[in-house]
Image 1 (cartoon, rainbow, N blue to C red):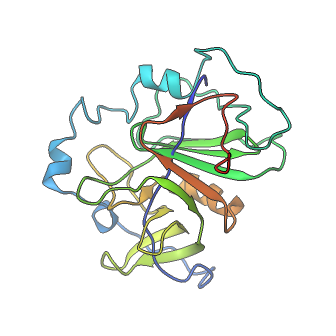
Image 2: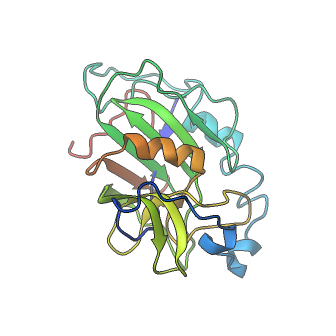
Image 3: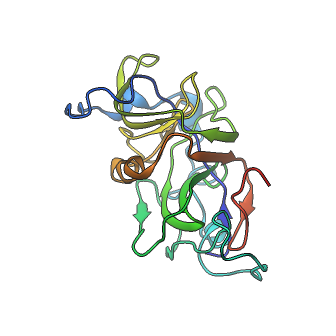
Length: 232
């Protein structure tokens, strides 16, 4: 991947440590996702297409090196050292995960509103990537740097009719989070959360810790040799 979009955001509520072994309720997309006319009316080839990111954009965001890699300190855990070798654009519902052989290091998640992709980095190595459902103009996904506040395995949304939001990673106290329970497909959007496939978020939930940082941007790109250090 020559460049990677910085990404991330979502909604959640509840006690993160309660009912760890309770079964996850079955839900449908309408329980969690908005289906506002304005959103669906925009679900055309220019806005969504069949992929959240075009092949041209994805080339910049991820795959082959399209520009010179700057000099960087290989021992800096916040420098991007690897991106996953994903062929073509990431489609809605698609996810990738490969942490084999990746050393321990700080976990940083990125989400970009333009790319509509969430990436997970450990020690500067990209270990996960997925297309994400994000908010709308009415219910936007905020940008900024957000530490994980709580982990809630069997969370439900008190704000949206007790809709199940499994594997919640809470980012704000007013309901923005990364979570599962979403049908990640064309024509849907979240109410501001970052909705990702259950198979992806369950893996992220297992390794994420309170205080790990999620960076949410709007059209910001970086690549191998770029920095994920929010304090620099």
